Length: 298
Length: 228
Image (cartoon, rainbow over all chains, first blue to last red; front, side, top):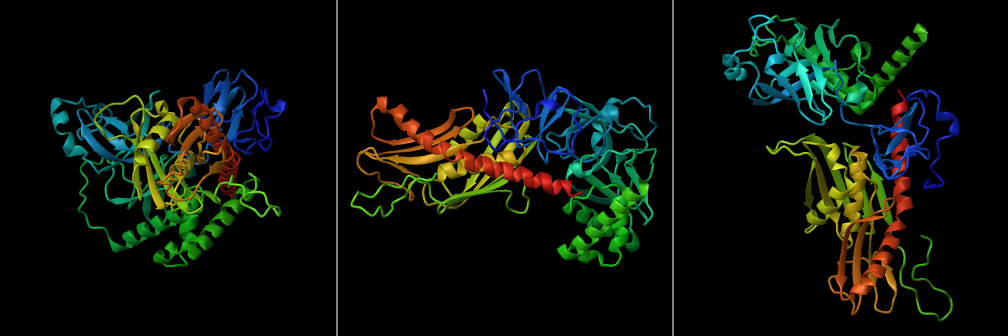
């Protein structure tokens, strides 16, 4: 039975059995309640639900099809963790043998005591004293960098910091941007030439600090009352504003775009970057530069 | 929706009762935050809804289904109906242990607040990317004793004309199901089906408008995302 209204285009038959190029064009826009496919034999993906024998949409977005899997992609969604993602999050709760971490996703993630490196060596087994002393290491409000270890089917996410580069974060600034602006790259830890460190979390949380340090103690011995020189603070605040400029203009955030933005912004005062006209000017220059880079590479 | 309102027909026939809705405005993506927000107005009744979530539920009870929290400011008696209707529409089983907050701000109330708030809430939920079974359309009608139907009567309607029935119905058009209904007045049980049917028919007339607004909204977001 044909439920489609006249103004919603249907999927053409030639697309059904071939490989579809993902993410370039929206071939069909749907709203919840409309059928996504007239033919049967499709596997249902995210954003669809089965009613009787037909697949209907549960989101407003574009229908994407890869072979026999149909899903509906809504334009902006919450961060969806995948195994291996580097994330920056904050501790929300201290529970028995684990911490709960806010990573701006649908649910808080879990960081189990067994999955962290505590001072005293990497392979140390956790004792009951460690359990009782969990608050000495991480309390509510602390920021950490970690990697997604497991994602269960019910949505629970488990993190680990079992590497020297992860752990508790010291003095720095957190910036939250929409997670779809972050691409997964080879490395998410950058030592920027302007004299600061940047950790780009796949969850949209970005950490700016003075330098990226690999602390064998997992970062738990950092003195948070250290003095930060004014010059470093200026670099950090300029980077903060730059990242906000990129986010507000929908530009993907990675090392090159951040550094381009930083360089172009040097013509203006840091506080002026918060003005929409200055921000637009800098953003336009960044976009131009990024496009020129792509042209040069190809 | 091109039926005549009270018009000068030129001859001596009695004036027709209004069968049209008041002027309707729908805007998806309002306020600073944009996603998860919607504004709807029917005539002078206006409402803005913001949806936040899904977020981790901080309550100690572990729930297999998501929880919906509704707060309303600017009017009384909306929380119950909204909670009932929206719980039916959202696929809560897809959000275990999470909570979804629906915040409604009533800007002006000139009668018929329930349909306005329901439509705005469902659009805000869809704009927030929360999985639902269907969109929501709603209408309030007044069925007069002489058989006339007045669609979307303005004003609080605290005192009904003699023998009339005031109905509000909230439906899911593609699923053909009622999410919420309210009937006020004196009528016989056998008449219920016909009366509700009239209200559903009025609500269905709004569906093309809502669909158009949603598709335009998605298209705009896709276009703005493509710029980079």
